[in-house]
Image 1 (cartoon, rainbow, N blue to C red):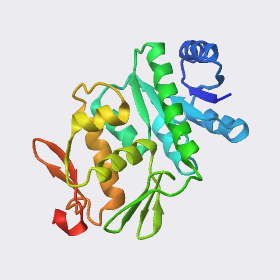
Image 2: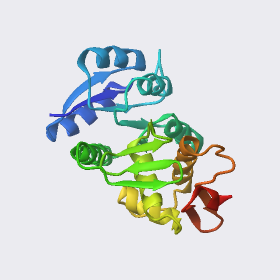
Image 3: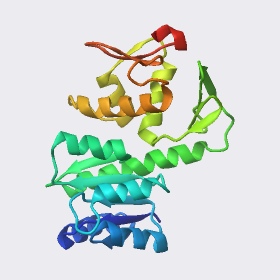
Length: 235
């Protein structure tokens, strides 16, 4: 059984999500702030985090920074902070998904299930024969879900890896934001350009020598993005 740690300073929200998640067989733990959540996580562990942003003692952003220093556990934000910059900041820190308040509990549950499906898919691939794609200094091990730069592993979130894998496997072709969103998230694209832009920016920071002047991942204005077939091609 998967354990989910729910962190929110509103008890009603914790209880509501707990009811829906327990009905699906998940084990739930609860905390009212980030500091309490870290104490619980260090003792009990968890397979996924659901956290509010605005909380006393330690807010969701501080919690995420602390978690990402030691763990790549799936992390879902739920927050009344609906400003795009807050959403973008959370994703840049390493959050895997974001749901605004007020929310439908069924949507949160669906996001949780989707995150677990992706994690399990990658875990099933561990240990299988390497199916690698080499472009420039990069090696994409799709089966092992790993990226190497100059032979050194690069830490990536599941969404970053899926986006990069899609772009590299279609190197030389332009991929639109809609194509990236629909193939990676498995949902109809509704024009959330900021989400794609955030992930492209994060990927560039990890693969490019100079993210402001990318060699690999170039922007095709008005169309989308293209992964160059050789490092020099993007110059």
